[in-house]
Length: 319
Image 1 (tube, rainbow, N blue to C red):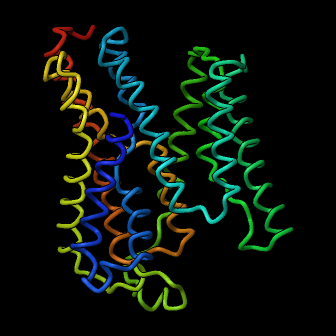
Image 2 (image 1 turned 90 degrees about the vertical axis):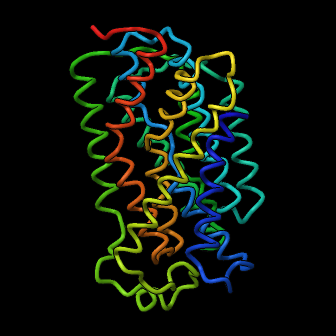
């Protein structure tokens, strides 16, 4: 429940802000506008990142309550993010059935398969999962037409595969280099895939599409900067939800746990491709993109703040 709320509260805050502040009142009752902004706000809302685990482990806090709890919250935060997006995308009952079967299979076979987990194997699994999801879409689109294609986003099958794999700790210099390279490459590809919005008139560029957000006029950069700051504040305030629970723990522990959820992860970055697939654009998309950029820049500050709170809570000094 806490993980679900921690994923949903920032999403709700940002959606309401996008709808009632950034869109004209004429769209407040428009179902399509709500759907578009729910998707874009899901991108702007934070999802947990693994960098925090590395930092806490370096402080010798792997056995602490905070480390164990944030692992659980981070995993379910990503899962909840994926699940909350399903109602925004699906058009057919069969997609719901497939998602349900995947989750049931992942739960029943949790940690069941002892698969290799070196970087080459992980890369192979990624290629196979991608090929299966795209192959399913290509086959169903060929049989039932473009509108009848079954498109299962790669995020959920990849997550379920991770659930079924028995954890094996693989730690070597080569693994670390490969992991860093893949992470850098992923974020680079996310960056170069961001839409061009400097000097673009969105209403003209998307005039042939049915996108409420894409047809909104461009705002001044000063106004956009204000929106980015406010959206960032709302998203991080929503992530403070766990502070109100675990009342048997110190406030510094609960704060560290919540601030650790501020960081942006791969799932959040992946959502932008879904948004772009729906021809969404306009100032709301720009604000969403710049919000994630700002919070990526602030990741170092979030980590240092969590470190300070963790040391205060446990009195541990890093070696």
